[in-house]
Image (tube, rainbow, N blue to C red; front, side):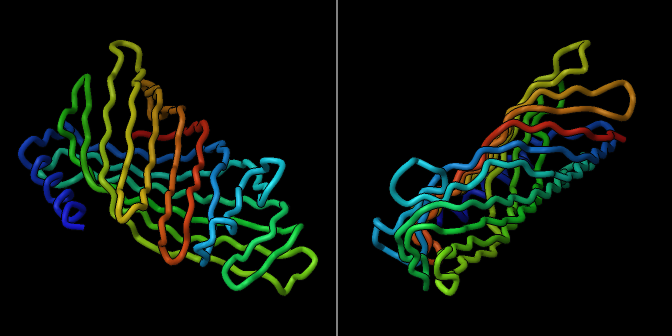
Length: 256
């Protein structure tokens, strides 16, 4: 825990001592679509590994058969020339999937057997405060991300609807953030990657983007790449397991 608390202080100190700033105020507003596949497994309020369910369909054992899907994303980015004051990124994404699988497990207060319906819903809001350490042909950002999660998993026995329970979670998680990009001269193209991470008591939360972006000579641009979100839980509110959402994305934006 001490390392977790000291890390943001270190990040801010480094940013203050090395900060570089944009020459002018820039605002990006846009949205896009993330086409993701889901994988992983979990269990809820049980220390028995036999109560673990796979969210995919492995063909045997306990599984939920969640569908791969896509999610919309909206964002605003503000990059300014004021020294020491952080730049801001605001992103909003919703994940939603469901399926009918087969499981014989205890899930919270419910005991399900054979055919089960289940659903997963989660809203993610990211508030990122970052500093430009470099802002030339090569750009380097470093900062802090607050990931606001609001979600739930519901599992119901098809033959006994009363056997149902919901695992809910609502948290704001601080994460370390870093990004790097390289502008390709005379093309309007930029390639880059960024990500955020935190680990605590055996649990981890990781997000990663790798992309190519095109900025036109007008006010619009386009970005496409790959994105992954990975959540590992080790006795967080009596929840255990690992969930990963990963796939390609594309987004359009206006740059003022």
